[in-house]
Image 1 (tube, helix red, strand yellow):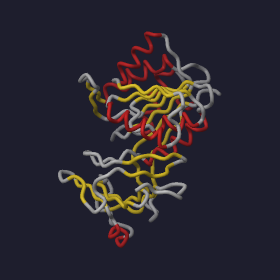
Image 2 (image 1 turned 90 degrees about the horizontal axis):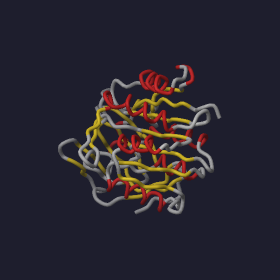
Image 3 (image 1 turned 90 degrees about the vertical axis):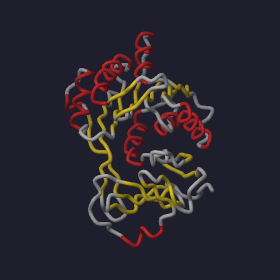
Length: 278
């Protein structure tokens, strides 16, 4: 059932023993969390779990099954239990969405690559931007469109495109297209709809070289995030600075983090962002 009446239906409750405990609306979810090997801060809280994902066993618990809806950052989104243990929401990106709200504006053209279930797309659309949403998975693009409908944004100017992100960007460069901002959250590994492979450590630099040709200077912006071990804030910032020909100090960078109710902090990725000169 949809959850109503909350400003924000997400909370990280606790971490420990290689897992994390989260509240998504009325559902309390346990999922694996590599690196969270310390003791649990609130052992009693874990007894309230209604949904649990275990590698090799999948989802279990009384809430297994149907999709459900939550409110997040002013949007209504649908969550689903995927085979990989994801639910369609990366809460560590909240800081990215807040930054994007400050950058996106009416009349801007924004490109969202590796766009998944569409939260960044919806944030930019809420601010009046026209968005091109690109993801290689047709079901995932349909999921993002569903989130737009639930959030009352189905009528906003969004182009929903199923395509390999690198191939799409290369074609946009050849077409002479330009954007006021680009958002990209590339995976560690992946495959496009026509079998094209993706490996972050090999393919990020060529991708950013092309993206730099799409962004209108001096007012354009770029938001780059990654969840790949070994690609920390400094490396992402260095890649961005090199490809955009700007000083390292012009690039904001940091960790993507979520703090639990118990006070524990989970570092779940890194960001590097160039605000342009607006």
